[in-house]
Length: 208
Image (cartoon, rainbow, N blue to C red):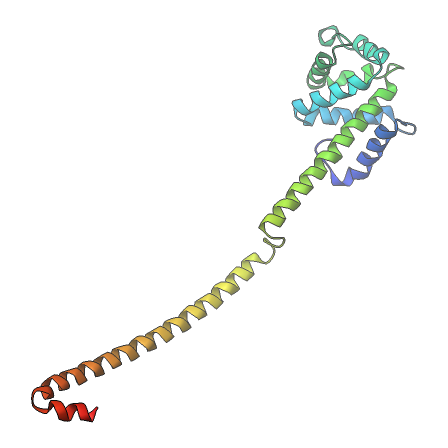
């Protein structure tokens, strides 16, 4: 039951619903142990510790006491100290996972394995949903179809911009050429005017 597998989403939902309702009829405790073992071997230790503590806090004292009695001496803890019990249980899962079946075979603990698997499944579904929401939010930030067709659209825009630039350059060049031509014409007229002005000033003004 770690990491999240879309193919097993229905199984997660069944376990999570059983956890919410408290009805574990029809679930195989040893199959649940398989899910717990997978979680113990793959999930981050802080995640494990938090879920185990939450599970032990909800367990009746008799079940916690039975669990402690079933665990090897070096992993035992005060049944009322759920934090230490969660820590030792996580350590046992890392170091001696083969003992889980023996521990949960106690008559008081058979249902507890399904309950723990249900809590893990509920966490898995919640965590997966948060990740999807974050990804969806990220896609909205950058545009829904940012990746889809981005390359083609970018290239098309680039070609259009290049064509626009070329057309603009041509227009600018024509304007520059026209301005230069007008400038040359003005210079020529000014030069003629300067030459004619001393002797034909009045005649020149009348001509314009």
